[in-house]
Amino acid sequence: MSKSKIGPQTWMFPMPAVLVGATVEEKPNFMTAAWCQIAGHQPPMVAVAINKQRYTLKGIEVKKAFSINIPSTELVKKVDYCGIYSGKRKDKSRMFKVFYGAIETAPLIEECPVNLECELKHILELGSHNLIVGEIIETHVNNDCLTDKTVDIKKIDPLIYIPGTQNYHRLGDDIARAFNVGKE
Ligand SMILES: Cc1cc2nc3c(=O)[nH]c(=O)nc-3n(C[C@H](O)[C@H](O)[C@H](O)COP(=O)(O)O)c2cc1C
Image (cartoon, rainbow, N blue to C red; front, side):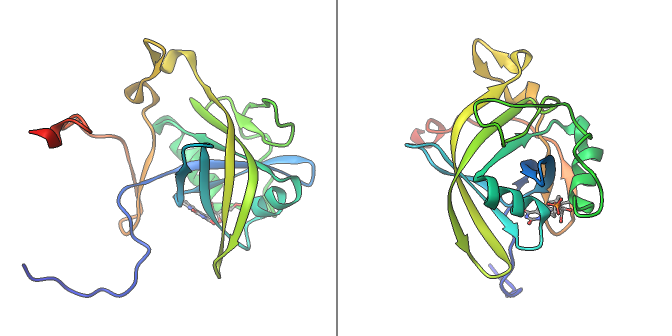
């Protein structure tokens, strides 16, 4: 097989497109993030790479709390808006219906079917970005996205982001059962 070296790239396929929430200057603010992933199981941890210029980062560092909100594809315009415009210049505090769980400074978005409430645990300085690591202290899920009390990914219809083409996508077909097909 022939391959080309294309230099060090930050490509990983696919990526989620989530909304990170924080309280900044006493108001909720939301930014779009694709560089977000689960970082541990026991305790449940999540990590998100946030550029040092982001307004949202200020709030996370001051309040030591944040949220990860998983949007459905129908929210694509609002997700993109939160990824284009900074809370430094645009007030994004009224774009969504906000609710709170146990953490008073982690704003959660009602329109997003899944919300993770997070306590800040670590900040790793990595140059342009800080890696924010938080413990998930609660998960909120829309009742109509559950099937037999389990999260139903088809009902969530999560937004997927592809770097390179910079397009948003939705989930494709199931192709096999994980932890199962490999046994064949
Ligand atoms: C699809 C998409 C993904 C993004 N992913 C990230 C990311 O992972 N980390 C980051 O720091 N910025 C990311 N951004 C850029 C921020 O969302 C953007 O700069 C936003 O305006 C920051 O808002 P704030 O200044 O109110 O925090 C992304 C933008 C888009 C459109």
